[in-house]
Image 1: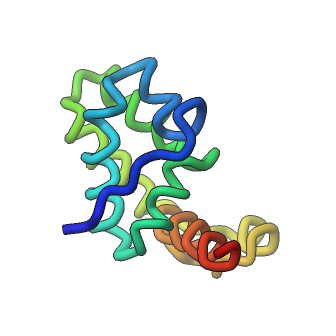
Image 2 (image 1 turned 45 degrees about the horizontal axis):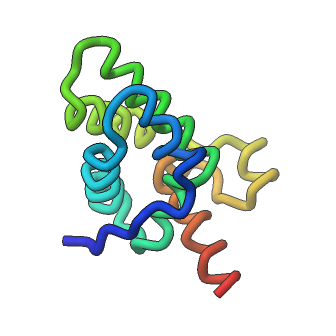
Length: 120
């Protein structure tokens, strides 16, 4: 089991977006563990992803699942499934340096992990 790191961005990112759709204190650990498990990335990368603009977009996807009547855990799982089927395209690879063809979720969480290590 991963160590669930607290958000550093309650105003924006996943936390800030989820507060309009579900209790972020409940949603955060579910999303954190599920993303860490799906990607195999370090805790800092998962937290930084969820705190980023990508985390906001991920939360929008979760909110869409809630709107469809899914439970919070199921909406998170479906969002992860979707983000794992999308792949980094040539343009995104050029803009970010994330290797082309990686699943979106793996690519963006790994990118956040690398940025965290670089700033440490």
